[in-house]
Length: 158
Image (cartoon, rainbow, N blue to C red; front, side, top):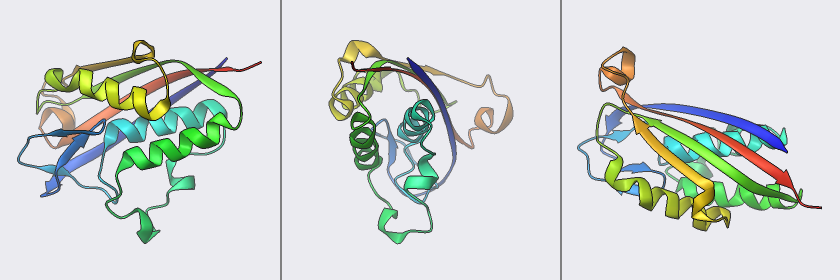
């Protein structure tokens, strides 16, 4: 078994659409990022890479490379999963927490879980997604952005 942890944080500030876990969330602001700014998928990618000890999201998709400008983060997730599958790993479970004062995420949880299940070729029951606020504390509490943390357990195929 291998365990990985991922974290990502982006601030609000542009007219990009708000994408969380591959779900388009109606909101007046997007997240500032080189890619589409999907903090949830970025944290999952880092958790997967941490579990396999092969780097981090910046190692594989550096922001200095223009090919990744505004890229759909689900493409990056699928690419990373292909690399990890070559190492004979399967997903045991993924536990994700979105930290955002706004917008409310509850009505998008199932869609996010479905997207991840599809992209990672795993049963939706292996994926937990929760949302919480920062109780009006810090940059998240001031509604300046969104953060996400993810934990992953991988098992190796025999």
